[in-house]
Length: 406
Image 1 (cartoon, rainbow, N blue to C red):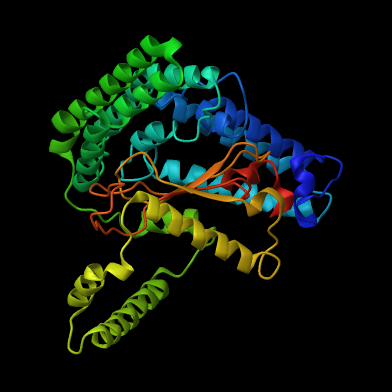
Image 2 (tube, rainbow, N blue to C red; image 1 turned 45 degrees about the horizontal axis):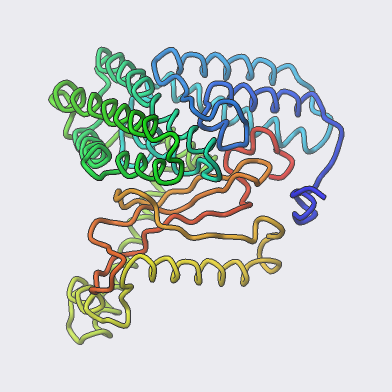
């Protein structure tokens, strides 16, 4: 029995591979060739220490792959409904990818969660830690951080030469995050110490790798602060044309922006009205901010320390799965198992990383614990900030190979 045999029947569809399937699989495998980090997360071995090419050449290689795949899709003939779904989804996504590139969007863009500096750092979070070989892989990838960062700086510089620079606020937050990574006792020091404790035989490799990673991010900080920040615009808004593309990327559909914006404003007003109502129930005449203060001061509503936070998240995650499985969703086998963990950094955002297609590599969802939260119970109170790992949720990238599960 394989792990797929444990899945609900809807996910266990077997059929002969079609030409459309072949093109999808080829694109999937070629995409992994260009991205060793993603390949590792999806269960491929032999590339555990590597990064993809973050330079302009790396983006160009992916653009060529997209163009070549679209040409194949234009010629292929679907033979059933599954093929029709695959073909439609791939053409829509890859065409949008080309449109966004033509609009000048790309890896040069910085933000606080999902830009290259965070991707490089988070590549270590889901790496296996079962034996000394695994720890050696982590140390090896640490040593390769400078190369990845250097390629990314090349991308930033090429974009800057064309007048494309991320907003000042985004550049500044990346600088602050990178400074936290390389600080004494920061992420890379902690990871190096973790390697040394688990695999003393590679202590020197761990030390050198952690130092190399810190040097790489230090170079990025210097470039961002001295070169990019002075030219960064203060305006955050991207404009209607780019927002149209971003909304399609997020939703998978084109929307009426004016109608959607009006609806959003209406919803915001409704929520604020409800907040005022609830605040008055907590304390007559209380403002929203006053109600928040009262709730924060209530020890019954506080989580004291990371262990309590982790336990709280685990309880709610398990309860949610139990309530939804078999009632609202087909959830079974490895998809039932959710593990909640505290993430290794203090960036404060919630994020999700899908599992490998074979469900053997864990997925992770959630965010880092914020500064100030301690394992002791002095009463520090923060919003939930965890990493949730799931051994079976269908991963976001899996559409490239497993279209028939959509």
